[in-house]
Image (cartoon, rainbow over all chains, first blue to last red; front, side, top):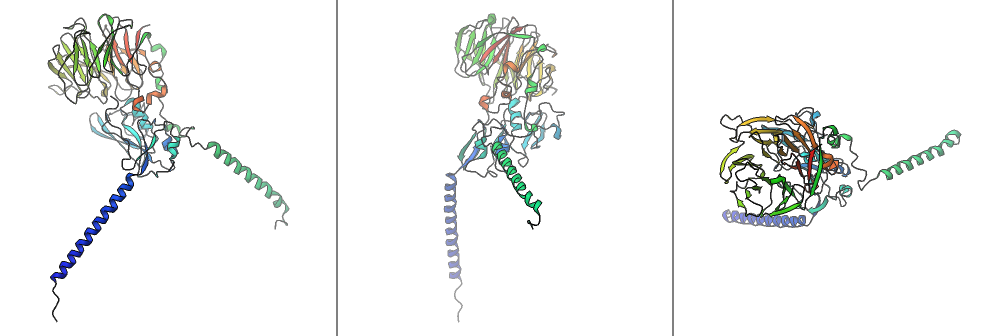
Length: 190
Length: 348
């Protein structure tokens, strides 16, 4: 008995595989687009930094134990000051990084030397509770580059946000889920 | 069992009653403490609060000036102030320069094509006495008279952000916060040099300008005084850019400069004393030419609407810093943008 020819089988196999891959790809694309369209129609909570007064309610009114609101930093607006008033209290004991010299009660700002006399400040998200104390310090003397935002990897997107209800300046509003942050831009102050 | 233990049977209603009272107390407390609207505040401990009120108090004995007059301004955003000929008072803001006589009566107005950022009037020693220099974002507009058409000098480019102008006898100095440099021009607008470069030996510290407040003034001793706000210092330069003197220390103490970058404004009195204005905790103070603190002109009790307004985080509500000028009589003119008025101070 002769063996059946192998080439047509391989061709058939490849054609079937290509068809299957194409169908899978098309299906994935359709599902992705559908999911994106669904996400586009959704809204999430966000905090308008132009209305926020950094009252501290974000730290205590969120239904999460650790608030979904945290400080963010606009590096484009920052003055990179040595004596940063968002990092140091009004009268620091020393201009050093010891806990006793830090304004943040949870030590959530990291200070790093760049070049004399410039320093960079980064928010350590896992330590920040969104109390806004640094926001006030930065606003009082500096450019207002530190501000609060709802972090969407944490926010439960409650139907009625407990912080929004307790916000004294009505700074919370619903924003599209595909553009969920209200970021500060440089040049507002000047 | 209960029947065999009568005291326990008597205790049960008491225990149940006590439990009911406890539940009622807890429930009442929960209702009373429930504050979904946030009216009770954030309930955070004291170390989470930011309070500058203690630093806003100034010993009244240090205040040796009194407000003699004030001029309300019809400007949404007043930016700069200068003393002019015969102690006229000029204020730049919106798209205009308002000109008042020495008593505060408005006498004329110059309309501008762009928003002004700073302003100066040439004194009698200048090559063109009375000439008005208006700093726009990146160039100067020059008016030889209030009703003359402006001459516009060359732009210093997209990065430029002019914040102060100071005319001397044959020179005009312009502080540029964008480039962190002071430009030196002749009176025709020809660029002669720049101050703030390290110099041939590299020993002149650069200007540190974290925010757009960078002021200069020419002193009667023939030196240019410039603020180096990131270093909390006043620096004195020859017109060729050699650093002659520096003074100033950071701190909230009254003789020092507060915050992260101060002073934000500078003026020179006819006798050479230096007047400084600070942002944040708004205070105007007088130093002698060598930097020794002398007195306070006015403090945050007048220049800040409420103590809490200092730490306002909303950009549109944040307090803009004062601008300063001094006239030939030694009066100190304070442009108070929060109140949109000029406050005129004289020594007590």
